[in-house]
Image 1: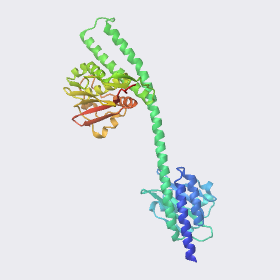
Image 2: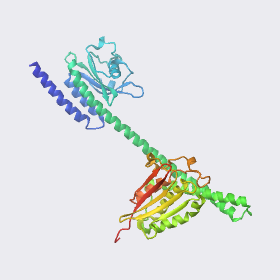
Image 3: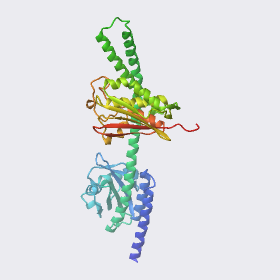
Image 4: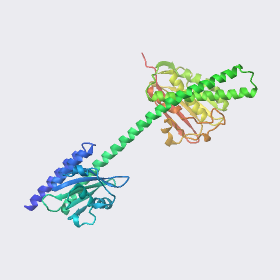
Length: 426
């Protein structure tokens, strides 16, 4: 008869564990379902009360997190100092513990009873461990019939503890990810605000500098000496550089907020490439760099915003000039396929490590330090803010195209992008 009762109780506990497991995994808001699971466990073990303690990762105190029994409201949030009490011993040793008589155990932390008015006679406590990390402990207190817990009940409570630990770990991970996501969202909002303010505030002094430059260059303030003209040329280059930075910063902000509407039309990408390369010829000459274009003999019609694509090509070619040493080689190749056109801008410059391939399209990032590719001129002395590739990526993806890089350190890089071709009959 005793064996039959024991077998029936074992089956009942097994079913309860299955139900508790489903319950714990039904939501990431664990406190309420934990208390329901604890009530179920307390009923099966004839316990007067049960609780889950969570370990504070900073102070290592043990906090009453989920509680059942009459003293729930009194003890919720109460903290047990690190290493104190039966629960502290269980967490530090990472072993279960059965205490037949709490009053005779030197590890017993009586402060909890004094605070709650509860009298602990006997208790069973197991650690909550997952992925090698101790989250806290699970405890049941006092048998309702005045008896004591037995060693045979430890495996059941340990199994329940494993389910609880897994559910808590999932909930904590979800909370951490949510907090990280919120923090990134806030950071992104701050970043966008700063970008907008900076780009707006820079425009006024830039415009003033340009006005004074044109005034001095016109000779209204008097005839200029050769050295003064040379200084004005340097000033003009610096103003162009500053305006380019302002434009890039503004474009990033607008693209991030989807405020750029594409003026899509059909245009000849081959003609655009020829025109931009011809425009940039003085820059190639300044660096004594050789340049060539391929595949632009015939028209290659694409669908897109000409101004935006011109900006992408300009940024890619400017990067190629900047990161290629004097007397280096730069090549632009255009290929027209049935559904898309592909542009490649290749150079034999400093190259990019493979681990940086994806990150270089992030704003404000450059893979190499400026000292590794300085040409000694104002135009190329700095690597800039790292906005050109970020803008290119956003523009190309807005056109439903792709952009990527192939590179080897010390041997150069090739940047590719695609655009959709003209649709027949459109």
